[in-house]
Image 1 (cartoon, helix red, strand yellow):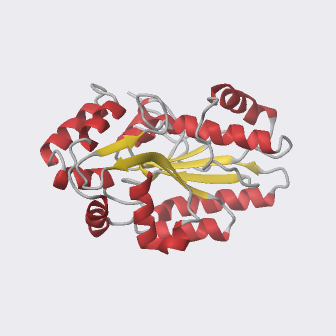
Image 2 (image 1 turned 90 degrees about the horizontal axis):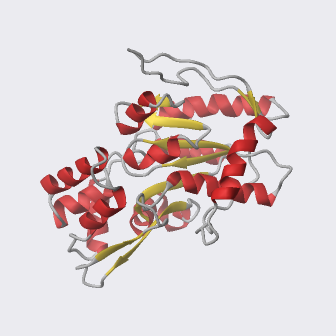
Length: 293
């Protein structure tokens, strides 16, 4: 059975807190890293959230593949090969995206007609904005599709205020060829751990005297596993791949059902940060799940 352990008191900006992660970030940052959308703000907390299966219950790619691509059964087979580790994410995803035959706008209309937003997301997003917490989408999906969905919910102008860290996409005019433009040259396509390190490295070069931003990451599935070890506070949707991975590998995390659960925990963290001039915080209960015999 999993048990909960509360991690020790940490100080943002302390040598113990920053030394290892900033050194790794600066060392790992590629010379040609795509960091234009990773602009650190002067804040002690920043939030990154996965999109498919996290902000929205369904997966945008799955909706397309099931209707205009390889079909539901083949998609499930290919997705299973990713989860089991038999095939890498990028290679398998290339195959699925390559089966699509639908114009871009028509595909986006299909996606938007079938997506259901997490019931607590809009309140959580407003909470972040009201409290000066920068909110970023960090996804292994395709930025043009995600942008189109956000414009439906927030309007064109409102969606511009939400940075999206994801992959690019090239679609032929007739929709017969969909080609992902992967963010990173790796088997992951978009290495979310590297994106977090890129953010930290950029923050460190902007103001060496400022505290390192506390990184909150929210996810659910296999594409979020890499980010799990780099987030300072990790939220994993209950019962899915990311939570199972955290339990197996003894990674600190908070389970959640909806963004309302996340808001409650982040609000407590924000209140503790505000009470301390030195940005002290303590992770809350349900912090570390440990698999025991």
